[in-house]
Image (cartoon, rainbow, N blue to C red; front, side, top):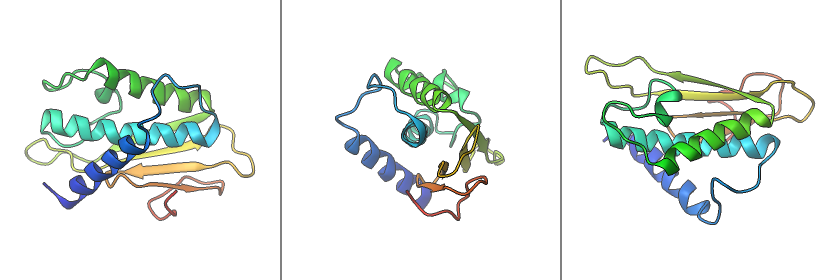
Length: 151
């Protein structure tokens, strides 16, 4: 298992442990809270996907919410992903998922997710995450990157 997968697995565990009092059915979040929650759920679902398929990270966000390569996500998994994405969109964010190219064995070893407000205004937060599991952000009117500070 690569160092990034171990780090992401630990990040997902910490996210789940920290969110143990929350549920996917909690009240709707707004703004940056919604998009940060969406990033946490996506990172966790990526770990579930990788462990369930053995093929690395998902090729698309849609693959995290549907059966893929023999991986049968639980109803809870699908609900969390759908709620996270819906929450981010309702809060006025657009998410862009990019997977790395598959290697010769079909394994995807990288992914990124960037979320920007559909209508940027002063103080709005753009958020970035990747296969390290770290969530980063910027309040500048630009796309977030791996160079931004962790949130």
